[in-house]
Length: 310
Ligand code: GLN
Image (cartoon, rainbow, N blue to C red; front, side):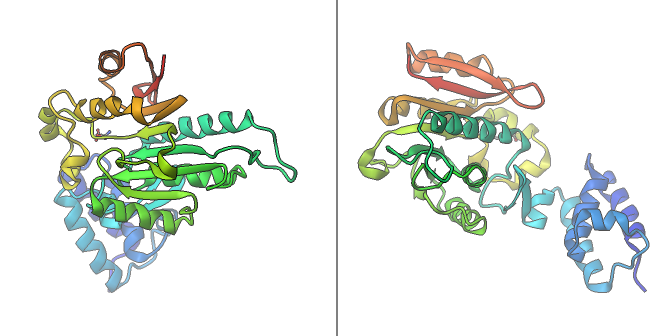
């Protein structure tokens, strides 16, 4: 005889709370859902249903991993981001909710640029002229690039013709995960995945400059890494560690912008909540005469640095 869903959840929640999880009940619901192959909502709605021996075994294994600090997303192999389910594993950082701000800003920027073009018969943005060229630098799991491609498709934008996305990543393993996520969301049209440190030596389309550069690079200060929640220790350090002040990678990106950004182009770079002043200062230092400003995320914290030529 196996335990019911309600009993399993109660026991696991208590264990995860004791292990230090601040989201013990939610973790338990997500992991039990994963173990039985059902939505979390179905789990919550059926507390008296039996769990079954196989599922109970999987659940026990998952709870042990979570007790050891492993993120729920890695145990499930799945993270929701911008309304989509992304495959995640230790090849890449787990997408964070605050990064949805960068995605929304990018979608708004693309739609504003397309709306300046004449509409085509049959609806959809005009196809005349070059596509809007976007780069997602350090794409990791591909969450930013794929979420944008899917959102644009829902707005009748034809990837490849109206918009192209170059996704770069220096970790070949992470790049492979990004490709898998693009394929899983049928979003690979008009997207290119290139292994590169920031940008490839020659941009696609014979080096055509980029209209929109997006980046969520590592920006955590090296000395802050040990203080991150234990779950972060399961993620690739190279995806988090931004050097002494956290801005090493972002400065390297800024230094490349004059070469890769089109006239009238714009870059949006995610920053840490405590980098709302240091970010624009880095721009002033590296790109004198360029404009920089900072947008906040849904929590009201500094999050996205916007950079344009002066
Ligand atoms: N926001 C992430 C964190 O604090 C950091 C992401 C990044 O460095 N790009 O864990």
